[in-house]
Length: 286
Image (cartoon, rainbow, N blue to C red):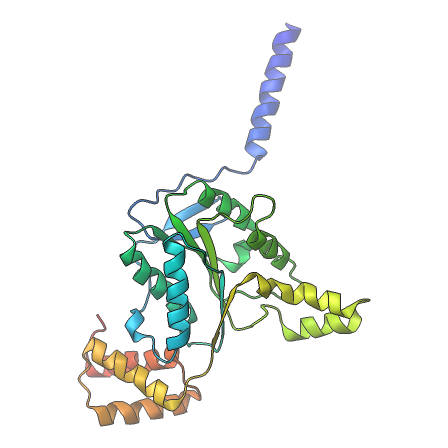
């Protein structure tokens, strides 16, 4: 009887421990889907059937950075050495749009072998779990993408990202690359870096600890505010692509007035003007 009681107690303990254990990642269905969103809790790759993206030909004023990222992505898709990439700089100049467009362009050339996985900033600490899933799917190649990546002064999760990009003992999976966009070149606020310099016992070592995260990215691609000519070129490209019924003079004067009221010029501002114009013309953007 005592043995039966002990066995029953052990069974209940085992069941309780199993309930407390973190859930195992669900096996992803990768076939037929090219883009996913990573969820940390429970760990899961959620398929994205329709990616919100812009055609590569519509991204203007970023020719050099476009070509570099396309070449890097193409090498990675073909199994050749390639670098993690940090796209940093001015807001609204097409950083995240370029990542999605580059993925689509290269994926069409490689029979769907390239998968785009978006990881949210708050889920960065779960990156090792995602890397294990990627490692177990060697038939595909994965771009792990974090949009608007940055860290606050009291945030230490950047250390998790540094360790993950270095790969720890196992190393980063050979079929994974990491792309990130940020308004900051070093991903950390300047006052945070300056504060470390002024208060640390060894200022240079403290600052190096903060800025070394960016060193994990082999490619630093800078995006800068566009000129008026580049802005008007973006407008003309969108108008031609969507067949908007507006003559060149009206398009130009309207675009200049629009950017003046916004106080800025960027790809995002150009797209907002095109949306406004299409609405006033009664045309759909399809």
